[in-house]
Image (cartoon, rainbow, N blue to C red; front, side):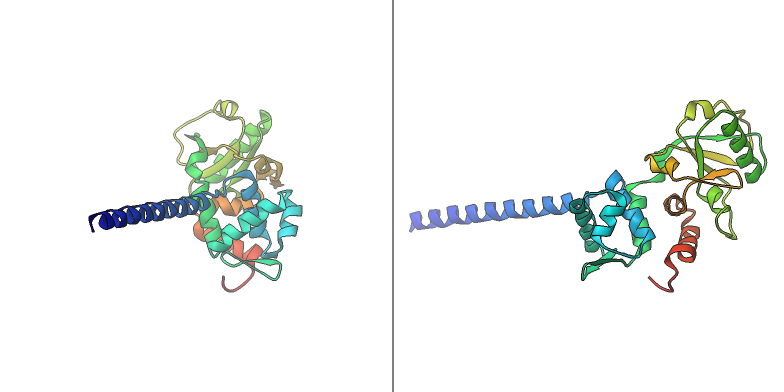
Length: 242
């Protein structure tokens, strides 16, 4: 009887150990899946394309973004698991754009893009933006306004936030601008991808990010979420619900 009891105890221990290994492997797999980061170059391109195209296909996304179809498939199924997109009959439909914007904002937090915050001897947002614009042009600095500074050139919105957000890849030269104790903080952002400068547009001589980048940055800033949603619904989504 004693040997039979020992045998049962050993068998139970082995089964328990194997079960533990399976659980660890399963949990590791879930963590790996969660690590799919929309800040990465290719997944970010896919996410931006989805925001611009409510109904699309894996082939269309791959051809339009130059991202391998296998990776596109991985990103789309990941977003499907999060109930952000729905895949059926060869089509991919964006179901919840707000949730996609939220996911991007978590993976690409704006605070990590901040290079410096400064003030100029200016008293209004418009004066601050104009001063920045003329300084950048004179000194051949590539720049692009985003957030509310870009939105006011694209969409009529009743609220303005007293901060200027500007991307530049030439921080050293920009910091040579005359600084002061003005009332408008200038948040200088680092372009974390080439298409920010490549896709910028010029309106009334002012350089601003393309509209989907403006929407992403507004939403990611926290204070611009309502503006981002309203602008997105008015110009891209154009539906009553999501």
